[in-house]
Length: 360
Image (cartoon, rainbow, N blue to C red; front, side, top):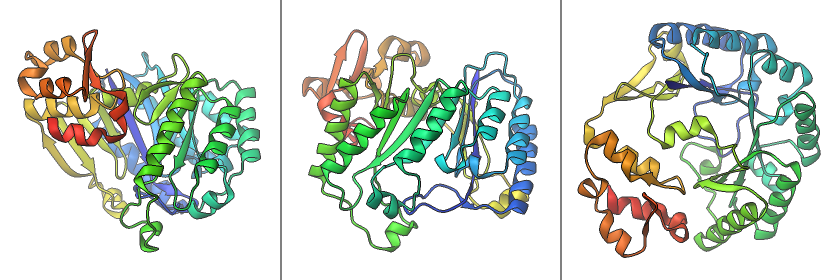
């Protein structure tokens, strides 16, 4: 079984921090893009049974209802008899009863909503516009129509943000009672509005305090911290994202998407014009066994549970410690070995990249 990611690059406005593949929505482009998407999927999908589908962006909900229905019908190309999770990303401003009923009609069972913050100054800085009351109203609407698996995204550590602002954001987030919460410390990427304005990050000390507060508060309120940036109620882990972190295979369709199929990791072009010409892939790399094992470690240690040693041995016919220098890190208490798993000591999760560099 495989998973499927579909990228929709269109947005109604461009957020100041975003470096994903995106363009402002234009109807002619969107119509041609969806036709191109159909061609790419028809050409490259090999008929495997699909476990999860994730439609992300950009902003998939920026499309018109007619275009969204075309997109959802397009997913019927996939063999969905064993489909467990079907996620659709949307912005609060785009959520309507008609949209939600359309998603239900085509068996979307998980919504992922970019809230980012409820603070006026943060929203202004990010070029986001939905207030807490807007969000509450739309989530109540989704609940009334039967959506029982909702993820909310939060961005923190914005320039000038105080811990008190984050605390209020978390308080309001908990009030909305989502099944899943994803939290991301702001990274000022090149070629974004914030980078052009020479915006500077907050101090590492404050960033770490914010992360610690998020972890402790969400766990205290019944959310399981299962991945570096992700928290969920019992049984609501993102099945699609677990595919990435378990180094399993998935298709990436659409402009700027990435995939991992038959031992090949590939990236699609970020150029809309190239994509519309049918020039889908910009790079692909056939991985060696050692490459695959490195991905297994880098991705698997993002999970708080870590890497199952028996499963690693079964997959690669070699012990983890024979390939990677985990023993000195276990001795230094940077890694912990427990119940057949090796994982990063929770107190070092915030600086996990430093530990990964020692391994790979």
